[in-house]
Structure formats: structure tokens, C-alpha cells
Length: 78
Image (cartoon, rainbow, N blue to C red; front, top):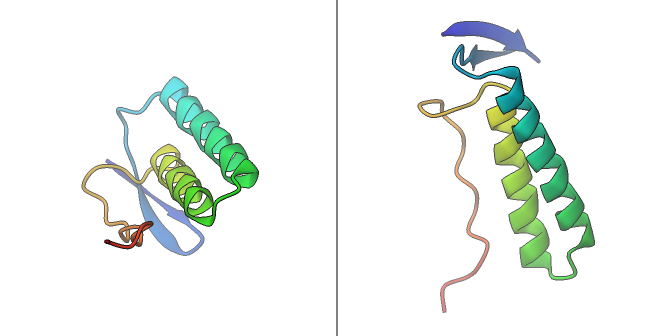
């Protein structure tokens, strides 16, 4: 696995990811951002922004085994 530097952070580049995979994740991120912007409920908006972030992480080399901070809880337990 190749290690790249982006914004002073080491990012592992997954050699098994194809350009089609990367394009798919970028398109999914764009779709989630559009859904988030159109959402009327704050929790839905937040959830879609989190999903977009995960797709962007995947597209830019953050994958299984990499450390990513967990998303905060979207809904409070009842």
C-alpha cells in the first residue's frame, strides 16, 4: 500500500482501488451532499453530510483498517 502526503497528513493509497471505484465514491459523495442540502430535518442533514464524508474518505484513500473518527450519534436514545 502506497503512502501519500495530503495536507500534511499521511494517506494510504489502496492499490486495489480502480479509477472506476474512485469515481463511484466521488459521485456518491456528491449525491449525499445534494441530499443533505435539500434535507429539511437537521438530523437527516447531518446524517447525509456524514455519509458524504465517508464516501470522500473512501475515494481519497481512507479505507478499511485506516483510523477515522467515528461519527457522532445522529439520534438521541429514547
